[in-house]
Length: 133
Image 1 (cartoon, rainbow, N blue to C red):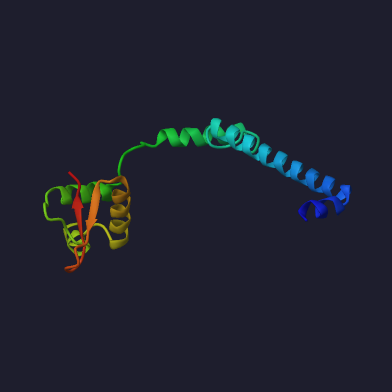
Image 2: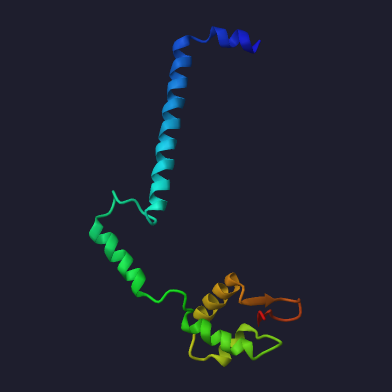
């Protein structure tokens, strides 16, 4: 039955479908090669940006000290290292009055992603941030 339906389709329709599929495949290949080239050239394609902008970008990135934690993360680290039982966010705020709640939440979130801090919630009361040894 399927073969009978295929034979009834006009050849022009089949050719158009194949041609559009071929064009789509070529477009995807071009996009793939463009992406590969961008990654090899440092994250962006040279055709889109001038060399002046590209050098300014690399200079500004090189000028920063990469790999240093934010001051709030250093402060949280120093407080949590001294505690074996951990601290709730309220007690962490009390220990670090210089930083507001939002910056403490952002810092602990980033530290949890890095694996430096765990957040333990046992069902009794609030959860506690604990330093990973």
